[in-house]
Length: 290
Length: 305
Image (cartoon, rainbow over all chains, first blue to last red):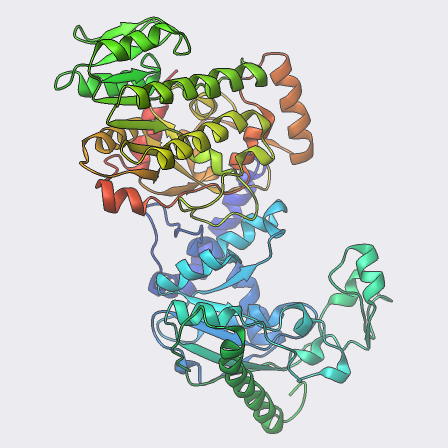
């Protein structure tokens, strides 16, 4: 919602930019399989029309900055899917690029939903922005509902352990949380393993200063060649080349309320698969920026 | 049958819907304007002993408790006393005189509008409305009282309805007051989705609860769908005033104390964070189907003041 004072500027901007944007993305937006009500919002507040504006910016990053290459994206089945990926790079650009890629390249396009943290809804503007782009609060009930609505859910089981990895731990998977497997079993959803190669080098971290991070209330305090020397500009990622590899869907059956040890066995299969895909991706790429 | 709070918006609608086929008696301290001729209204406070006479006299087929008052005018102590002891006494009478059906109107606002809420709350979620909103605690406790009554008396068919925000030309509450302001204030940066229930759909739910042969327990009631606050304000079309969040709280407290507004500061949470309910239980068991679309619901709410 924009204050009325700014509305004429907003309208002028829309008229100028909307036509070329629509030409490029209108068909894709209409083709996304979601359930929109008469006003264009889905049950979780996702607004594809709003998202097209965001895609305008992120598509540039996708095509020209990170020059993302998708491999085998047709492996994702239609209908419900749980996308499991490695997490890296200090800032969650990997999630952004996966979502972008799955909107721009496959036919029909998919609107990937990912989970946001509990404290995000308390932030003005950010909370609304995330909701309109299709991101959903990370509660198990919400996740189950999304999957039952045949949506694609992106989950990073490594969590913050993954994204705050240092240079020395790069491309080695951290421990996986096992919640996603219980969810997959309950909602009978195929798991699509994803390996993102190229995100680790975007903000090479030498050390993560945890005590200082806690003191400042930040999730992490990475020491990189650019941060904290260049201040907030130190968080601008390097233009590494992203290779996103999609694996064939994995189907699991079983009782979602099984003991941890049984679930962990299944999670290990997925983790091994993702690690294998990462290793393969590393071997076949020509260079970090190429 | 007996309707407490019959002179309130929903009470009037329910009485008008049922008076042709049932014998309707009502209890309210307020007069019932436009009362149909065959409805009997007893102008008494439902905490008084006289109410027992009503129970003793007739054979009451059902009691609809719509009388839980959530009025900003009452102090917390008064509200507590009025709602809790009053409801307690009423339920005791229902038990003593073997009323077969008791329908209690609660509210989805009892779940509380919290940042960590599920998008669609089901009936088994805890009622956390009182966490940030002390004034709603009486309503939360009344709901819990009703639940205890439900478990303790399995021979009585007790139904607790928790509708989302009810709006319409007849009901009067904080939301209808807000929607009819000439200048609509809103919190800058917050735009959650909210559900609106048309008052006729809420009345339909009350009637379905009574007519169903054996449904019992808690039922959430949602309307035709969910909309972001900004879309609702756009449909209303009045000029809007953005407020910055930290200052909004203080400003609202001040205005409320001066009597210039009827909305309490913590109520703003309901247009800040999500508090929506899943009404599949009502749809599957009671056969509830909202008949008014979102657009009609909003349009009807605009002629209420």
